[in-house]
Image (cartoon, one colour):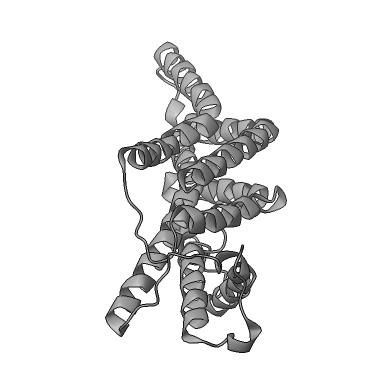
Length: 263
């Protein structure tokens, strides 16, 4: 029979420790998960949101029978660190999709000659070019509008069954192979977004090079830079709908893989 919290001893040390461990795992997620970990999300907002979600998760996770309350502060700190690491790892893996999209923007910026226009990205606090920002905003909108964040919280909830509180994540060969595959998917995502546009830009470079050979008196390099920018922007707009569909499928498959990793 499933054990439920007793309201009479709600503030007992056992209940408080369980709630704090749930809260810590969610806090680790908030520090690395896409959208939630951006600079635009205030730290206090993340903490309060983690506290509310932990309150919702608490009665569902309470039935962990193998959990033993730590006997001293050192053991409790170790448990806190383990829980934070698990939550941070889930969010970090989910954020790899965004890094793959950012890489595609970097690839196209170099090919279009826009890599010199890097500036501080207010969302992440690092230098980023304009194309990367556009793609990051696009994937963020997809992440929110498609409800992908719900799958992220489902993955965290399932992790309490796969990795009960007080236990450390055991990196067996299957988990390591799955994580390597997820890390390697960054390049697949980056080239999946950028390759159609990149291929056309390469062809345009070849055509401009042929023109330079046929008309050496013409300063083709003065013409090439604006032409490549216009072609690249036109192609980005032309492929925007297809990119949207592609990223929706990528985010869905990626979060499903994370759920399978922690179940």
